[in-house]
Every structure is written in C-alpha cells, then in structure tokens.
Image (cartoon, rainbow, N blue to C red):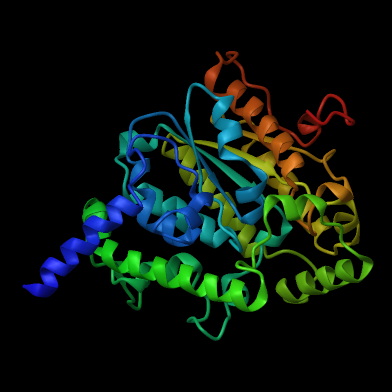
Length: 365
C-alpha cells in the first residue's frame, strides 16, 4: 500500500512538473528534451496518441535532417488547413521510417488515417540496411531505436515473427500514465548527470545549440572524416541499398492505397558533400525511378530544394543551419498549402524531376 501511494504521489508530481500538452493540437516531437520523455524515439513511441484524431494532419517523418531542417512552428504558422507534427528521428533509415508510420497507424482508425499527409524526407544516407546500420554492441543486431523503445517498458515482446504487442494500442495512454513515475525518475537522473557534466567539463550537453550550429564552419579535415564516416556507415558499398529503395516504394504504395497523401521531400546536402559522395548517383537514379512510378498518382507529390546547397548554410555534412531551416520550412509550407489547402485542378500535373526545379535557382525563399 505504501508503494502504491508513493507511486500515485510521484505520478501526480510528474503532471505538475511536466504537464501533458493539449491532446488535440499539433506536436513538435523534436522538443522531447523539454518533456518527460527526454528523447525523440521515446516521445514518438509513447506520445503518438495525439495523432488519433480526424483532423487533417501533416506528419513529417525521416532522419535528423528532417527533424532539424523542417521547423514545425514555421510550417504550422503558414498552414491553416492542417495540424503539423514533426516525427523526424536521428539516424533513421527507411525501415525505421516505416516503423514510425506503423506506430501512427496503430492509434488511428481507418477513417482517421485518410486525413493523414505523410511528408517523407529522404537523402542517400537513409538507404542502408538495418542489419548494417543498427549493429551496436548494446542492441540486438538490426533493432532500431523504435524497437528498443518497444521493448524497454514491456509494451511489446520479442517473438520469432517480430515484435508482438503486450498492451493493446488503445490502452497506450493508460500505460504511459502508469509509467510516469519511472519516466520522472529517469528525467531527474539525466538532469543530475547533465549538471555534473557541466560542473566537471563546463558543458552540460553534447548536442550543439542552434546558435552554435549557426557559426559552425567545417574544416577540410572534418570534411574528410565525414566522407569516411558515411563510407563506413553505408558498408563500403558502391551504391545505396536496393532493399531500402523497394521498401520505400512499398510504403508509399500502401499509404496511397489506404487513401492517405504522400509528399516526398528530396533533402539537399552541401555541395561539397554531394559532389564528393559516391552514393549520390545511385540515389538520384532511385529517386527518378520512384517519381516515374508514383508521379501521376493523385495523392502524391514531391519537392526538391537542389538550389539550397550552399556549403556555409550547413553546420556539418548534412544538417541545415537555423536560417536555412527557415527557408526549407517555408518551401514545404508552400507545397503543402497548394497540395492540401487549395482547390486542385481536375487533372493533376505529373511530378517529374524537371518539374521539381524551383522557378529561380537563386531564390532563397
């Protein structure tokens, strides 16, 4: 009984210190560090219940460059007809993007799904097989960050056929409420560790702030290290994974067949990285084939930002600085406004690589 009442006390305290945001509003999952959930994968897994609504929803999925390159508040302020949520996750490949989409679907009815528009941000670094990408010693080989969150608190269990739900998705919010005391203790422990790091090293977090990213300039040595890193990350292969390309096509097809809308965002990288990468060519061929396959489907569109490749506009080999992220976000908001909020012509124009080019290559708006 004492443990039970202590649990209730800590749970109540967690709602005071970290109250739940409005359940019917848009959600920026990139703000996980300011919540009780701490990390984006944990926030996506435990906080996705907000997407259980019949409202018109724009759901951004992809890797970290989707997460930091598209600013949820900037897009939302320019899009009145839909609620925007950013579920981009650092290190995601196409397989993990598919897992995130499946998690969203778990908490939605079939009717609610038809109000989804998935913006899938892609670049060559996402097309690597899970067995190669997720091979850390502290995880089962091939298990993504989403898999880790599935098993962490017992919501799922491992089976020979993959993850099996222990708690039905309809009880997700109740399960998260039960977990709140543990989440609060984890949060306090992390904050304490950060405080100790600050006292010892003078730096509280390993992550750079927007201000630090804005002034960052990569040296030639850092560029060479980045190229070596991606060659190793991609498995020293000559091109991107054909399996991941096919998985993306299957994911898009399933979404379109279920009545959902899809926007493919071809994400730019700095010119030095694009021109030096051995993977850019196979990525471009895969993208061309994808657009040929889906370009005439009525609920599909795509956007390219090839002109936004300035080397000094990126804090590293892939992540847009804050000023460029504003441009990315405005570009996407304009595409979404035309795609979702305005009346469509009876015959939709086919999407091609040529049609994705901006009207003025020098435009930054």
